[in-house]
Image 1 (cartoon, chains in turn red, brown):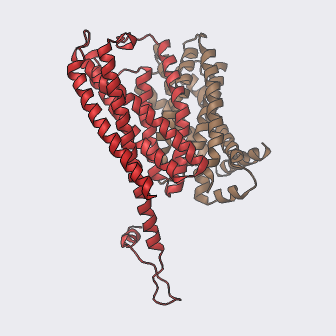
Image 2 (cartoon, helix red, strand yellow):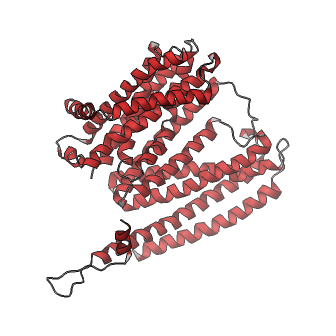
Image 3 (tube, chains in turn yellow, green):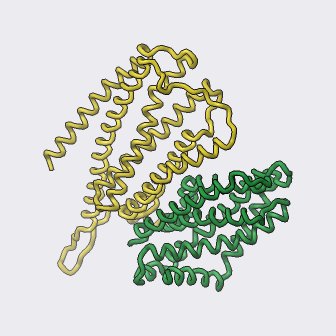
Amino acid sequence: MQSTRQGTGRWTALTGIISVVMLLIATYMAFVYAPTDAAQGNAQRIFYVHVPMAWLAYLAYVVLFIGSVGYLWKRNQTFDRLARSAAELGFLFTTLVLITGAIWGRPIWGTWWQWEARLTTTLILWFIYLGYFMVRSYAGEPERAARFAAVLAIIGAIDIPIIHMSVRWWRTLHPEPIVINTGGPNLPDSMLLTLLVSFIGFTIFYAHLMLQKMQVEMARDRLAEREADFLMRPVGRSKNETTYPTTGREVTGASED
Amino acid sequence: MGRALAIAWKDILIEFRSRQFLGAMLAFTLVTVVTLNFAFDLDRGDRTSDAAGALWIAFFFAGMLGLGRAIALERDRGTLEGLLLTPVDGGTIFMGKFLATLLSLLFVEAVTLPVFAVLYGLPAWHPWVIALAIVGTVGFAGLGTLFSAIASSGRTREVLLPLLLFPLLVPVLLGAVQATAIVFQGERDGILAWFNLLVAFDVIFVTLAYLGFSFVIEE
């Protein structure tokens, strides 16, 4: 137990250091090394953040899916902690990808938002993450919350490609102003390299945050366990008379009811 | 299947005896359709796609009301434990609940469609619209039954249910509205494609909900 914790701690530190270094390099490359885009100007530079964010938003959902399937299958707390951690980070990155996308869209498209398939799907993804937290917080007991949330996450995982497909079909049936096609495979090497460094840097950063978050969630579970043990501990004066300690919270709870 | 029908029949019988909910759902759908007219001015000939959207929004909202009850009623009355104790698996309970919800929604739609046709002079009673209403509602009721079970345990179920369900049902809403709009415009091109797509969604969503339901109701 002790050795695994030390192992996790070492990985956490290692990923933390590597990601900080890589992201510093990526920042330098994005602003100094990479050339200014001929068509979009400096606005294009947000892509070095935006694209990795989009990747992490969906990567986190894959992890959430794995955690959810694993939990329903094995009923193992570790899988649930994995799902919980991935969901929180995924929600963060989905929010960031939507915001950075809008910031880029304003000067380039002339509008903050386009009802295009990728954007719409990401917005729906954001709502699915939101629903995931709502289920977790309103389902009551933790075991039930984990179960409900896992079912929602799995259905969402299967639904997201369907949503993407249906929105794309809907949009191709409606004529739309053609969005400027940027990037793609004909990106200059220097831009591609910057994107790559940023990509790897952010992915390691995600791994780092996951490790941190998993540890926090484990501590939280242990705390809840201890609290439950403490509350259930009999502290009666004699063998016949058994009373239970109170934390004081129940008293206020009772008066509110 | 017989057991699923028995559960569905039980729910429908409760509804028939109390006669509280179906009437309320129907009245709600009609008032939504009428209210949306003031919002979108649906009576004009060029508003056919808005009308299709209004129709489906009314169906979805009414469906929310109907779904909230499927499982919540059992939980409130404490009869869910009884249902779980009967020798049927979760999938069978799902099918029963799903069928009862589906039938009540289809009943509401069957009354709403002719009224809609009369009010807006649109072919809402067209065989294609009826077929679309059925396939659209199957997908809705399928995922809806599962999520009503998820939402029913919380205190905030009225808010939680649409929050969970609407994003996931985007494909169904899109397909149904697009195809209905095509019918309202008096055309035929593309309906079959959307219809087939909706059938595919139904198969996926009902299967998923069927499989997921057992995990949700186990206590």
